[in-house]
Image (cartoon, protein in one colour):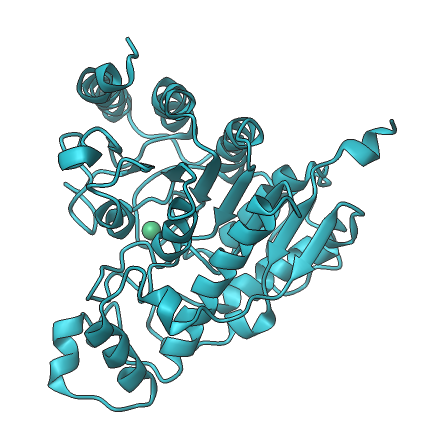
Length: 384
Ligand SMILES: [Zn+2]
């Protein structure tokens, strides 16, 4: 069989409508970043590969949204979206900072959730081996009755609940720089879903949670796993922590489907966080996730997430979808991509070095966290 026929069938769930919401000039989340990533995928030839399909999302229904969110909250989001503002909306997490009351927010959040649901359907029905819902994942802080950290409807929880209710086991791996607290909360007492979040420690970064001792509750005990890393963590140390913890846990859990949140706000140029990952370190993580996802009987799904440096987002998510599709990208950003200036190669130059003392503290922190997670969670999975 020619090698081309063995390439995974990969689906990109996206429409330009998902790049249009205006959060205001000073808000870090610029949905236009999705269009830049899509433009770069197209300019790179990735979207014309024979094993790649693009599918536009449909909005999630209110019934689907209410798999996780309360009726009162959903109605409040509708009112905000229509431009009806009252102080009561503050109770639901809306305000002038992270979650401003933006017209059209209901429709945009419902479309992101619908995209995640569609990505899961494409994979679980066998129509695709891997699917990337690029507009999803950024809502990972949204709670059942509260908007938080730019998140409105928790698309990952909504989509995964639909799969788990059909009797499938799901491993959720969140590599965003922030703790995936809303997804953890959605499954905190649920043994059907393993949630793992690798992030900058809540000691230094929003939302201030995601510590090793948050391991689940009741029958969900052991199925919430957190890897809180130090600010300034590099590719090498991040991948060391990933390799020590995530593959053994996911294999021991034996999921039917792997669901990955691919936030790229771990990037060293990200303006709102403090890690030091490069696009090539991020792509190495996605390659590891692919090895795990390819072993799952139903395949794997990825969603986007945080990422506030435009050049990092466009390159990293193009690299991620190329990994999903088994597509070889060129080394250089193609000249046909003109949306962003100053991008030369997909890989980054190494980030500036820190002093030896700081490096050694970060090194020691990483090893302490690995040991703590192993001690706390591994015995519950029969791992040493
Ligand atoms: Zn984030």
